[in-house]
Length: 70
Image 1 (cartoon, helix red, strand yellow):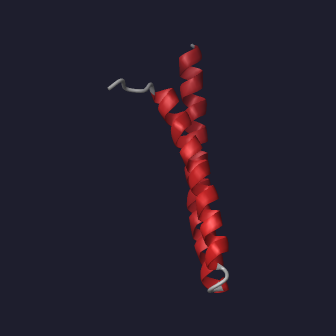
Image 2 (cartoon, one colour):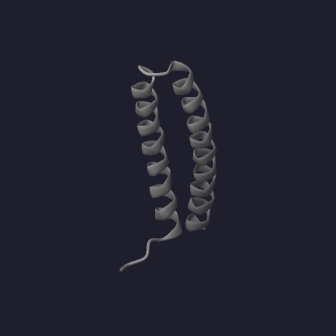
């Protein structure tokens, strides 16, 4: 199996993070019909983790892109 370059891997992780955030938002909306308080707490916790992951991967993609261009 062919291994991916770190830049391609970071871009894929970034895309998967965005997909993760979208799915968790849908889940929070789905659960809100049962328990609004749980849905709000779930949304806040999951989205804050998602934002942290997004910041990490954006920084990593930017660093790898600069290393790749030089």
